[in-house]
Amino acid sequence: MPILDKASEEIFAIISAHFAVSEPNPLETITAALAAVAGEQLVRQIIPSGRIDSKTIWVFDEKVEDVLYRRERDTLNIIIGAGAVASGLPFERLPDMVEILERTDAAIRDSSSFPPLSIPREMYPAEWPPNCAFRHRSQIDYILDNNNLKGEGRVLACALAVSKMVKLNGEMTGDVWHFFILALEVLAGCSRMAPLKAEMKSLW
Image (cartoon, rainbow, N blue to C red; front, top):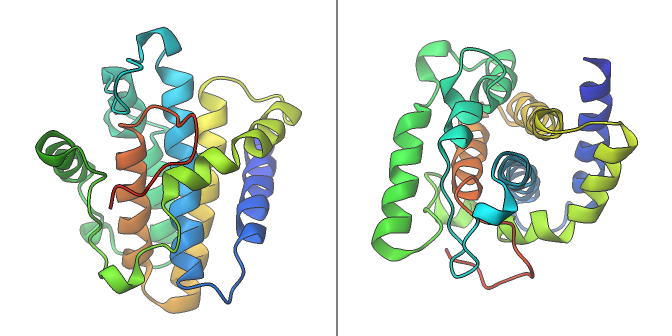
């Protein structure tokens, strides 16, 4: 849809512009920030605020799983994966979203921590992604409102921005898997988090 494409381009631009290329790991930082934005929108649009326990930052809802990967079309996994495939990642190398979510849930259950990433520690994003999503929330909402997107449309636009970043990074670096697994793991972690009320210390 043209509206989703337009909104995704604007989201891509606003997040990319925030991080200077001189910062450590700018491509990873931007990719993770976009994935966090998509994860936060997913929670905000799918889980009613009244069902989020204010005593914990962790949330879970079966409908989130459907939009993430379980339904037949327009899942976030498919949308982001399309960018990876377009950048040359073979279908047989696509990560298993179920396994990623199982690792995510285990990390939360065992240590109440944001799940560790599969990429090398020295390549971690320069900023903790959920804080990026919180910091840019009003700007992202403005873009989505300005494009008259509602409900799941807001989530899909954010996921499309992630897909474009994964594709671009793969074309620039030749290592699309690195950015694809980063995006999916951050997305999985943020899909289990209540929207932050303030920036917080990293849980990595």
